[in-house]
Image (cartoon, rainbow, N blue to C red; front, side):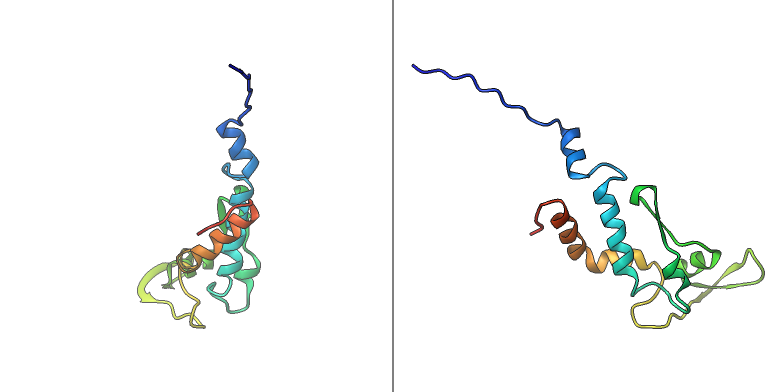
Length: 129
């Protein structure tokens, strides 16, 4: 009878997570945020382009921030009235363009989830089926 001694060194789950960039604020989180912003640009309300050009990805990709009080009004899609802080009305905002509208990042994820996941998978050496 022949015997053999085999030593196998397996990475810990934490090491695997870090190597793949899957930790909070890691490479995958930044890719996701970048994809959402880039793909969401055509859905982002646009008059002069300031909202699109001023977006910030913060906290390692865990937050997508559009500055300015008007960004909040546009996000919720309600006509506002009065002086700052303005009061919300029941009337919906009218956006220019067929895709532009409220909650544009959420709609981007809903509409383009598979393509975004494929981009992320490709970046970390995997596939989405």
